[in-house]
Amino acid sequence: MGKIKLLIYKITHPLVRFYWRIFKPKTYGSRAIILNKENILLVKNINNNYWSLPGGKMDKGETPEECLFRELIEELTLSVSKIEYKLGEYFSNKEGKQDTVYIFVIKLSS
Image 1 (cartoon, rainbow, N blue to C red):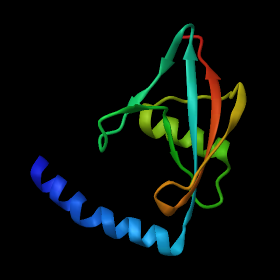
Image 2: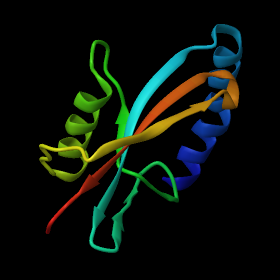
Image 3: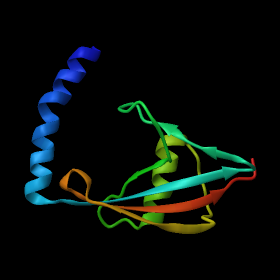
Image 4: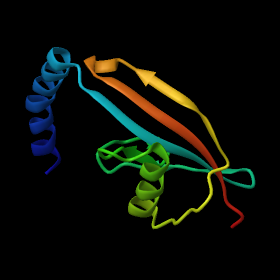
């Protein structure tokens, strides 16, 4: 199964990157730094072999905060009602697309 997945990736990834370079799509997303005392919550995406902040891509008409609340429920079954603050925005033109990711801080008591 791993070899087939790798083969599909090797075929499709250059096509996707070519599309991004031609059309320069804009994507938006939200991620959270979730703190519990001295701990930071990270997630491991099933498609990647690395850890990252929980969050994901914004749906059309969704605010960054709404996106974050939805993604936390989908990924972690974690219902959060309060964001401490917006840490900032991350911009990237990597791979030819224009990404904007909003980063928020959430503190959990348990």
